[in-house]
Length: 119
Image (cartoon, rainbow, N blue to C red):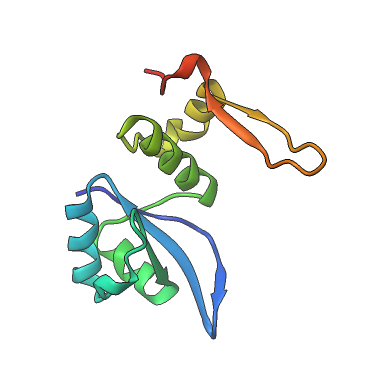
């Protein structure tokens, strides 16, 4: 089972939250159940969990990654269907995604180089 937790610190009321993702939904839901996170907190591809649950996840074998690594891994999964490894996540995005900066009144645009997800 490979589950990842990031180092994000976002306030939610009096709690501090971070993200938890996994290679598969089954792995993600299994870890959530193991650490006592209700399914209603599932966000479609990740869980938002408080820091006390993060500590339980790490103790249960979750891998700690940076917020940037997790975001790049999620981007790769959206593009290719595979989460990829955290140690190459940023390099994959830099080599695969082209970002056109915002211009007055327009949102940023990103697309995959050559229209595919690399690899």
